[in-house]
Image (cartoon, rainbow, N blue to C red; front, side):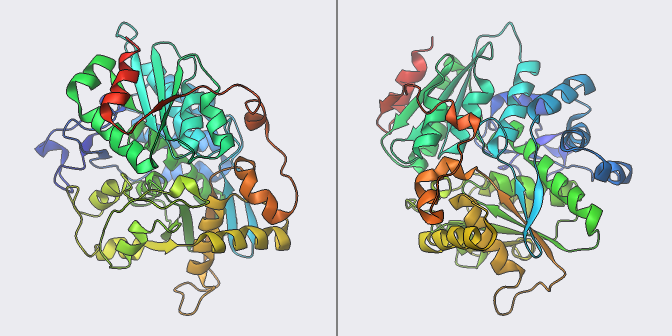
Length: 457
């Protein structure tokens, strides 16, 4: 796989400019010019591979995709071990309403969809890193689930240190417990500010050549291609599951969206791998920067607003650069109107906290299914797009999939009052609840973060 920067000319051919290998991009985190790595080109998944997907398990399907993407760089034995080791939990798809399916991505060790990308990335870094080099420092900003997934995935791996940067008081208590209780090679840093401040600080750290070089800094957020690419696995999985029962149905996927890495991976599966995923819904809360842009109101990043779906409280989503590049726009500044092809492929959707609470309450009352606030936002967006509104584009033959991104127990303080009963706490959460929490508190300044990172030397 050849990778280029989002600051390269959109659609640039690999022969005309600087490219990077997957291994190079994995350890760099972001491109030297400050852009994000994107595939220069990816051939569609071959028909012979596509034909066997229906009969495979999720890890087997993931290996088919991983070998297609990385097979020339990573030997099959390493790739197979990474895929099967990372994906040793179920990813069920089941119908929750007529024509609407839920893909449960929260059965990994930290009960969030980010386990899939973080665990694969950790195994790739462990297998491909230079064991004679100084320790690597992973810096990950989190609005909730990334912190737990990355901390757990890299915990106690030799030669790797982990710093989780999060906004103090703005993640759920159970999310915080998952990355502040591990210790060892994991350090939690609580910053007085919002998630956007965490992202800004992380970007400044990566852009500081002296700090980055001294600490061998890299990212485990979705800005790292090593965490983004494995997220394509479950889009192929959803397509294969539904292709067995309704091969001719139009498939619409609704993605709870904050930093938009999840949606980016879906678009790679659709546009690059050639999976017939008809359309996507970018579903978010009142932080509606991207839905506003998709509706033709311009792209205007702004400070995020706190909501009950806190992982989506993002005012300037970094992965949006990748989406724009994929649809033919280079650079970091956006125009006022999105390309027609982007508007045709992705519909924006924004929902209030009251609507989110009503959705959680309604699904429990009618179906006995508990969902977290982020999944509820996705379900609202999917219902709206599939025709439960005047003038909807899809008829009754369309089938929808909402990505369930976190176990509802991670947001018990929100969900339990709405459904009127406690939620069983899964093992990955229960085991850390009573452990002491340790974190370093800092102000939102690069110098403060630099002091924490310098302490590793």
